[in-house]
Length: 383
Image (tube, rainbow, N blue to C red):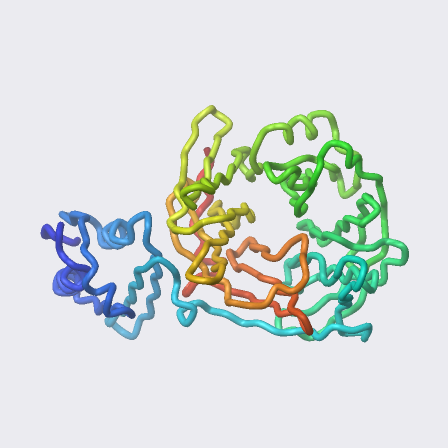
């Protein structure tokens, strides 16, 4: 148990008190953070609850522990963003070209430039990339080794998602949606009614409904999947897409909102029972917010773009199912030479993948929160 009142103390003083009472060694990775004021009160609170309260809603909270006999070490890092050095990151690059293991890219002189348009991650961590220029899907393993090419013939892939059974769904530039097996064989193709939107964003798949982000405001159903078969969307599925926001696994809707004048943002969560919660984006200079999805624990992920000095910082903010900010995953600075339908994906285990199509190669990053693992995911909270 943590006892004693520490309101108004600095972070360093607070951790010193916690350490003296528990015998746990704490470390802070930033000298500036050591002097940050802590206004929380800890009085007869279980240690884990005290540490979670210490993090606060506007700070990044990273928790790591190892055990050697009776000694338990824990590290707390607090700040506006996760130090890139503390994130577990791996990545690889793919050169442009027509080769079997390459990705196509074209700099148009009179027409539009074109490069890798989107990607998805399967249950094994393999990346399936829409090689739009070469009319194929390219598959790379988690270490960047080329696994296979899936030639698509007349299908020009612009977006891709994968379901839990390993079936692949490809949106073509001719407004068709094709279902492929794990080897790239086309099983079914349907026409997509694009008259229901003016502009569209990435596809998502939730509970047998495939949707696209229409007009930048929310999901619009384009297909259903029942017993493994791809079908046109039902009237009920289309009706669900009329509401603003993005549907979650438990029926709630996530609505990112950005105040362009003040450059701040939030995510409103509308629950099926009529309740609504607003989660503030703990960042300044926000000019864009995109809902990425949920992990298996019900935590949800929002990609933000924010003005930072003379550049744009890209981060992924992680919230628990009730809208409390948990951590911030910094996306490494990269060149984005080509436009892509999708640049970031979150997996069920909470790993974030990022694709950055540069001028002479495309760079992929896989970034985990320190200590995060699928086994460590909290249980989903059912509303």
